[in-house]
Length: 131
Image 1 (tube, rainbow, N blue to C red):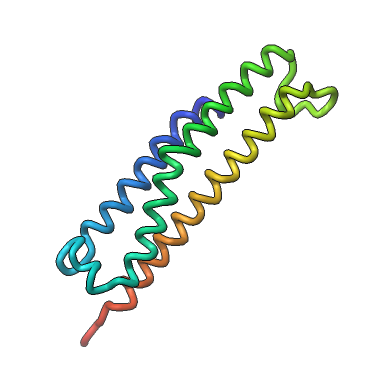
Image 2: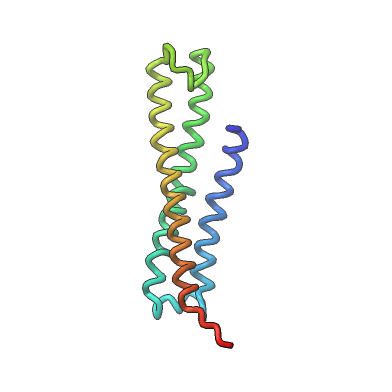
């Protein structure tokens, strides 16, 4: 699972950041320049951009690095990271760092999703259907 996660999430975070940028550059009716008329759409797009880029640049790589470090610590200790009995101080420190980095990545991802939904709701609210 760790191998899959290590390969999947960087692609997911990069795709997420790309799609947020794509949403900004395809803002109706005249691309990115239309955001000056609809300033309230800048807020969710800016927040989504910042949070997704933080995951791409900072917290995704940090979490992956700590996962590798944790595997090395498992080898040194001769036990799994989730063995709570007689866990070494080093493993406790690695687990703590992993938990913090992983929690940040999860929360940033959630914020990006919420901001994207906010932007989508804002766009949808301007749709007019006439019969």
